[in-house]
Image (cartoon, rainbow, N blue to C red):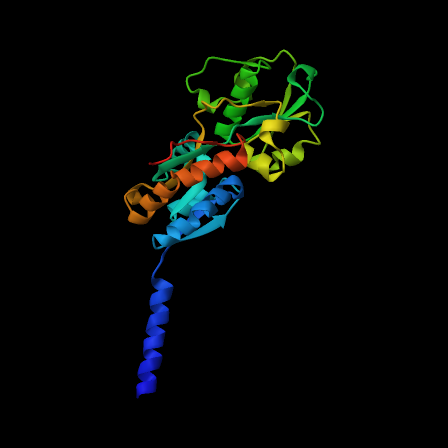
Length: 264
């Protein structure tokens, strides 16, 4: 009888150990999002939260996964992208925290400077609506094109180009494929996360980078009704810490930039 009681106690203790931490699932693209989450993983564990990072590189999946309760949060997008997704799919999602900015960059294996760009050059740009607009605004900022005055500049397309003096030709591709396209096009406009994955250094390899005052900070997103959940608030705190701020500064050296001031 005593043996059975001992065994039952051991089973109870094992179960208690396995359920002591609450699991928090978050869908994220790999670089730099998963890297940043790994930095705070141990801190959350000390708060009783087991962070499970599900790496996904398809922009179409994380919001659907979150809406369908497959995950508790996602970390891959900026606010204009989220707003467009909400309009298209009627998701009930909301930003939890802005974490970092990934400047969009202009890359080339054919040209060493913007001045060297020849007429009729082929430019690969992201095909999702908000990042296409973002790429076109960057091309306008560096003087390669001029855009029409439109009501919503965050949804402009190549049809909104007013002046294209070099006759640039555009190819729209899924963002993850843009680094691979570099060998087949003259220029590619690539988000920093995919540039980093392809071992490109935005601060050294890009011919031009998006301004640091860009509105495209990457955000952690949750379901609207979950905003005040204790575990998600702890995630928000961890992602606005001095520790993470310093990690972004030290590791990425300007390739990505913090979008928050660290908490005291």
